[in-house]
Structures are given as C-alpha cells and as structure tokens.
Image (cartoon, rainbow, N blue to C red; front, top):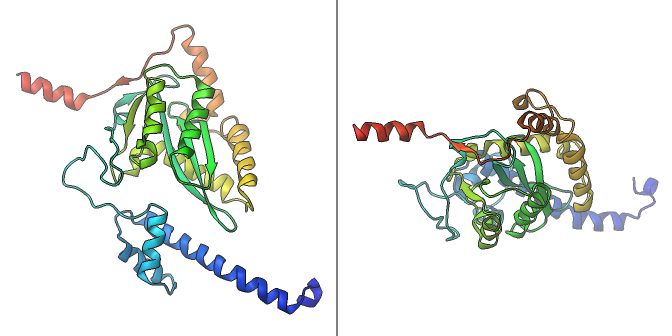
Length: 291
C-alpha cells in the first residue's frame, strides 16, 4: 500500500502514531456523550459502566472529565421547584411557553444548543426558532460553549425579525441562556423569559425536533472537514431547504415561509399582539376557592 501511494513506511507509521490516539479519544467522547444523553439521570459511574459495556477500556476519571468538559454531569432531582440553578447561580424563570395559545409569528421563540462532531473536533450549534411557523430565524456555530454562541444566534433573530415587546423567549435553564448578557439582550427588546424545568427536554420539544431533523437530513448525511464547510452547508440547508421547501406536518404540509405568507395574508391589517395564556387549571382552582 505504501509503494502504491508513494509514501515511505516510516511516514505512514509516524502519521498513524499521531492520528490513532486522536481518533480513539473522539470515539470515546462520542460514546460518553451518547450514554449521557440517553440516560439523563445517570451519574458518571453509570455512564462509565455503559461505556465499558460497549468495549471501551477506560477508567472512571477520564469519563468524569469528559462529562464535566461537555457540561453533561447529572444534576440531582430536587423535591421542590428551585427558583435558581445551583450550578450557575443565575436567575431561573418559570415555564410560560406551555400555557401560550399561538396565533401569529414572533409570539414565541424557542432556543437550544447542540454539538456536531467533525473529523477531529467537536463544535457547537445554537438555534432560535419561531414556534408558530417552525421557521429558523437565528443560528450560530462556534468552538466554544459559552454565552457568546447563543447570543450571536439571538442577535441574528432580532435583526431579521424585529420583534415587538411581549415576545416570549423559551429555552432550557442552562448557564448560557441564564447569563447576564443573554438576559440583558432579551430585556432590551422587552421580551418575556421562559425556561424548561430541569430534566424535562420535552418542554422544549419544538427545538428538539428541529435539531433532530437538521442532523438526520443534513449533518449526518455527509462528512464535514472543517467548521467553515459545516457553516456553509448549514446556512444553505436552513435558508434554502428547511425554511422554504421542506413540508411540515404541523403546518398542514407547508413550508415555514409559505405558512407565514398565508398567515400574513389572512391576518390582513389586524396587527400583531402577544400570545394569550390558557390557564384552565388555575382558573378552576380560583373558582373553587371563591365558592
């Protein structure tokens, strides 16, 4: 093989000695992330056991280090609803999105983060969706999982949509979304913050479904060698395919752009207003207490 490729044996073994450890660590990291995401309440010991069952000869400390670096260490479930997240100390907001009745765009935005594996590194993707039309209105790619990444996606959404006061922004309660810079940006447009409860990813189901679609139909369908290449394809998929061509069953098998256009025509000059909140459970309780 070396003769056919015109490469000396020494060069081949030198490259293999450098590339093999990096590929092995990437494979281990992916296995650790897969186990942690599949079992959200597993501690590092159970994740370590799952990884060993897959055939990885690794100790507990490397598994715990990878979980800590990727912010996947399990959080103990509390017996009461916490008002603050003890992991980051920022203010945590209640889940308002579950009570909203959406009738227009820019009433509810949902946001989330995910990771993407490239050839030799992990990068991160932040997205913002309009929950009414399922349209991707903001996104950002980066190598660092800090508040600047989702903040870039949020600013893109604000610049493209120009929302009015009263918009509800829903996300998980991660430190990126609870950070002072992110909250200040939302307060600057007079938005209302909403967050999922701990350990309940289904409370941000629209964004979770979008990320699953993006990975299945674009990211996992091909290999990407660099962050720049990934960014070009993600932008093309979101702008040209997902927003304008892909049919959504929740929208009556229309694309987000088509759905928004039809809704705008139907609404006419009625104007925009914030989403209404449906609280039948609390209304019934108040009525019973009054009686």
